[in-house]
Image (cartoon, rainbow, N blue to C red; front, side):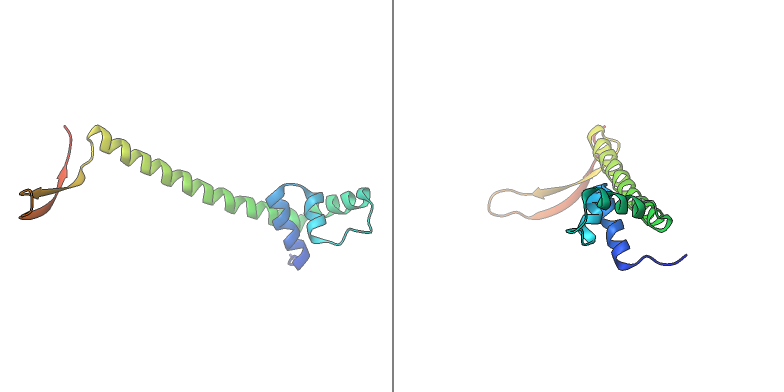
Length: 114
């Protein structure tokens, strides 16, 4: 399959960003002398191009994969917080022996609520 031209690639990126083929077409191509209907027809034709469809689908798949990674990461973080809260997991605490001006020793202790 032939590669996209630079303008086709820019169209794909803008189309993916805004979801509107006509807006994307206007952002990439010179349309000042074209009627609105003509711009819509050109944008529609370009959006129906198999190379463009494939590229936009590729962009969507990448965005979805990144989004799912973020969701998985958030779920993991919330699970850790929950486990700390209900005592299933230990957390580090700093404990200092002594008080006032002469602190003698600072140690880290893992504590777990039971």
